[in-house]
Amino acid sequence: MPVYEFFCRKCQEPFTENMSIKEHDERTPKCPRNHEAKEVEKRISSVHTVTTKKSLTY
Ligand SMILES: [Zn+2]
Figure 1 (cartoon, rainbow, N blue to C red):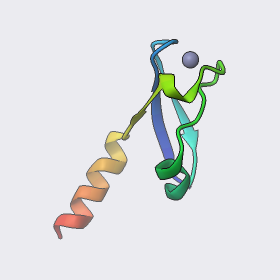
Figure 2 (tube, protein in one colour):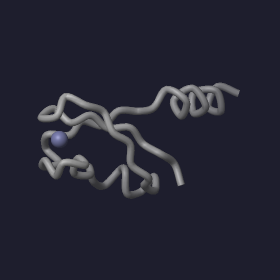
Figure 3 (tube, rainbow, N blue to C red):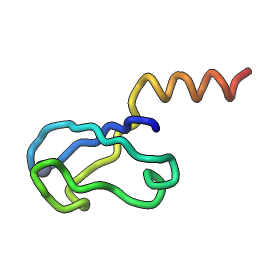
């Protein structure tokens, strides 16, 4: 299962979450300190981004 990176605006801190690709598309998790999902931004981890872009290019 991929690990996704998120950023909580309230905490001003990034955190990671294990979730399926489908879950990631459908929802944003609450932060570890239980702030609402609307305060959380999705961040695409650089490792996964590079891998995806490469596989699309070739
Ligand atoms: Zn938070």
